Structures are given as structure tokens and as C-alpha cells.
Image: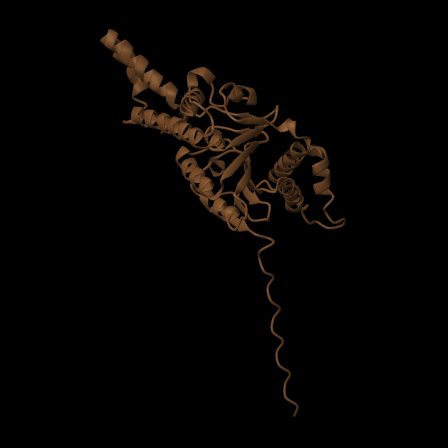
Length: 328
């Protein structure tokens, strides 16, 4: 398997000597994506974001539906391999994306070559099977609430703080004075927002696990409920960015396969992952890429949404030759 450095060298070698043209990073990435699809025979899609850059343009949101519609269009197999790399985003958008994905594909296998966190973890739980390496991680699904100050805090932590304040003030009303500066920074209704967001994350994951990954498992409802509550418990994980490993998911009786079990598959998946990583480094304006094995892709560059289908865009027709003037 070519490693990170070998694939970078391959990309750099595509530059024509003596020219200032950019390297053909798209061509190299598509080469490895097609090799993976050939190996599995499945529709193969990557949903990857530049997690190093971060920012609102990289989150899972409703505009991603356009990308999925593009890359799912015209596929002749009902089995999907999805390579997922994301720091997360909106649970509501994830709900719609999962619904559309499962309407198009009977069997979904999600590969996590590096990390799929927060809402991306929720997305992975809608698969029939998750494939992770020793180095891979998913993350807690406890929702993060944005405050007017611009700070994001765990919904569970905020709810716990409200409960602590309520209990202390009920025991000793004079403590309200000490709590007021803290409580006044939160907008009205924030407690309900936190509770609803936490319930939504758990409900969706529990539903998806029961319907897809655990559909043939005895006691699937109980396993799904236990796993969803564990994934959403901020008191267990202590940090929203904390890694949850393959072994931990297996302990919760989820269907998780070791990427290392199939050497050829591991090589193919990691080659795609390395090529994607170089894409973001070489094209720093690109922050999100949704692409399939046929070259259909949706790219977000600095807030702009661009769909490019190199194999599908017809070449422009040559201009018509004007008729020769009549002989005098």
C-alpha cells in the first residue's frame, strides 16, 4: 500500500516540468477511489471535510443534500460504501441525510478511516456495519448548544448546572443572589432547547440502530437504547471531543468490523483517505468534498457550492465553419 508520503510524491509527479500548473490531485484521488469501488463492487462515496480548518462551512448541514443527490444519482447497485470523515454538525440535517441515504441503498457500510465525530457519529450509527481501524474514532453525540456569546457548551452540562442551581436555591433561597450572574447569561427557553436536543440525538440513534444495524439481533431494542444513552452521556465521556474506539463500540454489542481484517480493503480505503488529506492541503480553499467513483462531486470552497462532473460534462462543439463566398 502506498503510504501518505508515497501518494504525495505521486501527486507532485503529475506536475509537468517547466510549467506552473497545479498537480493533478483530483486525478490521483479518483484513481484510488475507483480502485476501491472495483475491489468491492459497491457504490462508493466519500463525505469528507477539512477538520483542521473547521468553521461553519465544514459542518454537516442541509446543503449536503444537494451533494448526496448528485453522487447517488444513477447508481445501479443498492449497496453503499461511505467513507466518512467529519467533526459533525446539525442533528436535524443528519436526520434528513440518513433518511435519503437509506431510501436509496439497502445495505450501507460506513468506513471511518480517521474520525467521525458528533453528528457524524450519529450518521455512522445508521449503517448496517461500521468499519474502523486501530487508529479510528467516533465520538459522543451529546449536543452542543451555541450561546449568544458565541461559546458552545454541552447541553447536558448546562442542564446539570440549572438543576444544581435549582436544588441549592430550593434548599437555601439566599443562594439565588450568587447564582444570578451565571443564570442571567442564558437566553429564555435555553433549558428546553437543551433537553429537546439531547432527546433528539438519542431518539434518532436508537431508531437507526434498531432499524438497520441491529435488525437481525435479539433484544435489539434494548441494545439500541443502551448504546444511544451511553453515546449521549456527557458524564461518562467528560468531553465532546473524546475518542470512542472500535473496542468500546463492540462492548455495546454494535456491528463493527476491524479494517485490518482485510488487507486489500484496508490498503484501498487508506489510499483514498491519504489522497483526500492531500486534496485539502493542496487546495486550501476546499473545505468539504462529496464524491463518488464516477467522478460526480460536490465541493464547497469558502462558502461556495460547486458541482463538478468531469466525465459527464460534454466538450463544447467547435464553431461552425462559415460558408465560402460565391464565385464571382
